[in-house]
Image (cartoon, rainbow, N blue to C red):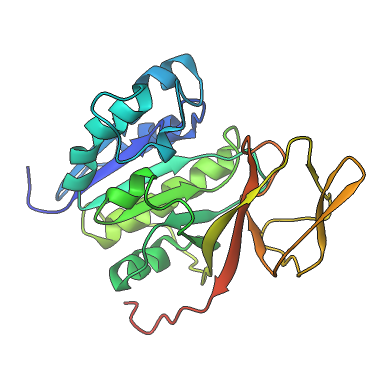
Length: 260
């Protein structure tokens, strides 16, 4: 192995999200000039069956259990691999209207540097679930959640973001195409928003659009559900999760003065 960083491209954390395989097939064809890039299928049994999970959501099962259910055992087995890498890139898709979001569980200067290189539209610091998700156990963990599984433009954007990062860390040759960088909007995702049985979101509620205190955001039969505080809906939808609508976020104002 040449000197350089160890990067894991993780796919199939959720077995029914196939976009990671499309991304991996392209990235694996690139000549690596320094370091090591490894593709890992996190949940192979669920991936083979095209199911989200077998017993429980793998991305809520970390750090795992040696003698737990299937996903807990997978998390336990994956933990040393995740910790061994310099960077872990985790690929996801979403059924919500959320697009172009990069997710992290911590935000330091090195991670900010990489965020600006990848240039997502949104950066989500996922504090609501950070102890149980795969990337939280990486030295640097970056999860792409850019859109729907069957959208080729989503896969293309993810591939471009990964290539930009690999160029930046000296793993691959510089890209020939011109790149347009944008400044992401940063959000602290600080808690989940419960979904009572039978509740349905108000159609006016949109991801990243402020919900104000006392605003109606959902209904259950004839009852209105009002916001207890101002928050930004993140990963919101009626079908994204079983027991929650999604997450509540607040804007972060992040300086890029330390970004190279």
